Image (cartoon, rainbow, N blue to C red):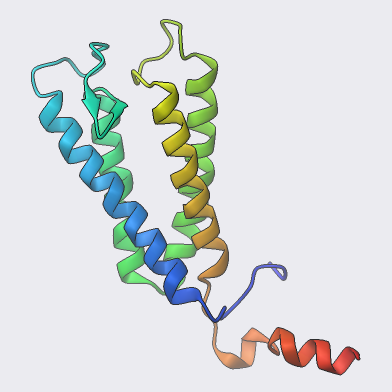
Amino acid sequence: MAHTPVNHPLRPIYRALGALTGVYFIVFGIVGIIVNAGEGLFGNDGGLVLGQRANMFWSIVALLVGAIVLAAAVLGRNSDTVVDKYFGWGLVGVGAYELAVLRTDANFLDWSVATVVVTWLLALVLIMAGQYSKVAPPSRAGAPRQEREAQNA
């Protein structure tokens, strides 16, 4: 993809943001599993996890998502860019679904509006991290923006 920035000067910060998002999902999943230990997999009792509603299933999914995102960030080698983009857009889709079915029986993840908002914010952070943390050898990266703009002037 030609429009994806390569070797962005702030890529370590974006990669760290992706890793922190993974850590948040891991912490959320662990606390959610502890809080919802006595409930069923798809319980709707309204247990609060870090100020958000979640059931055991969403806690397990959040733990797995966080572990994959964090592992990709630690592994690097552009695997984090792919994982962050796909998981980010996937979380946007899940959040849109949950917002649409919030007050119906189809809310099988037991979400609230706060959970949707936090998930969307974390999804946007993942998309941003995936967009700006791509690395390539200098021979394939092309000229930095400053040099390209100086050549056109």
